[in-house]
Length: 415
Image (cartoon, rainbow, N blue to C red; front, side):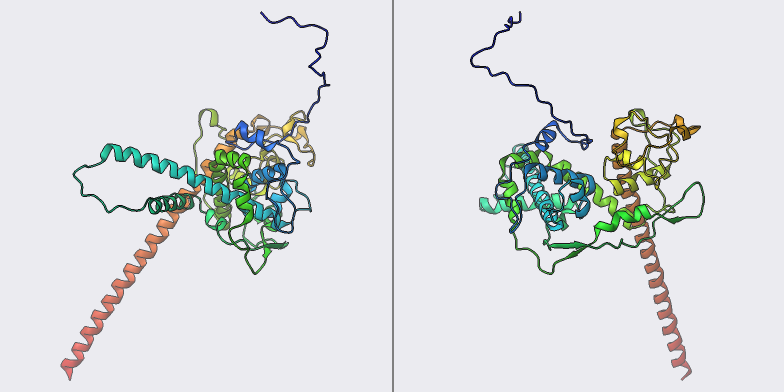
């Protein structure tokens, strides 16, 4: 039985009016836990202990988490976009953002290496209990500190080997002075309206505008104070320990995607690997490799998980091939883009259902893995061709040497 309530108040209870909080509208990153969302909405006004950059402002909890989420959405070395996505405003310089991002990822690497170390220690303990040979000669004892140092180095090496971008993260920090406004030149092309002729895509070129920077000549002294302050913050350190793997995996995926674009594997004339989909991950036969290529380009342009923005981008293939979303679909619009003409969605477009965020997230990951396998095959093929040419050249060289020796012997006989 529930206790019966009374209309009268209690002397120890103060009745307060109900307060509503505005719901933040953003799609949580894949793999994000409820703890992550709880931490990210924590007290915006609380500054990080010891988190002030020398001569700068202290970082508040909300800013810190927004930068972390921006890294997982946009990737490494995209400081201008990270600052804009995290809504930091002009009070934070590009170098402030870059330095905090480096501190966050370095802290994540440290915590992930500790997790790997625990796994290595547990595995070694189990194998030692099961396979220890009592008759084996006793090994020369090592100091406990030396053993621990070697194991820690191996754990850190595993993290660095798995996430290639970490090598740059652990490198020196040169202050970011300004962004270079001219985009990096490349040969990216796209086909429009079924026309075979290709043309430059200005919108895609613009994604590199803030990706080039002018750096200072002298690196900051190590260790960086921001990294130590983040690790000493018990709340953020515990949160980051839970999510370090997610952070590193996501930024590595975006780093790889950036490499694919630079290497030309996302160009229209490049082969797009075929990946299957079934069950809940099925999209439909209408989704062609061209959609996959534009999906990856859209991730580079708008960030991981921001699929509605790329769906509404006229520079990509989706808007002209998939019916625009309903006007009452709140997630489809961000207030900055105009709503398309619904009547224009006829024929096949009207029957094509836009995949869910979860399906597209999974597809992006599968595509990147498929491109990595394809790149390895291409590299192996190129290496084999180089080796084959080397063998042919070596064979021809030896043949010419033998012929020259024979010619010299014939000349000796004539003399």
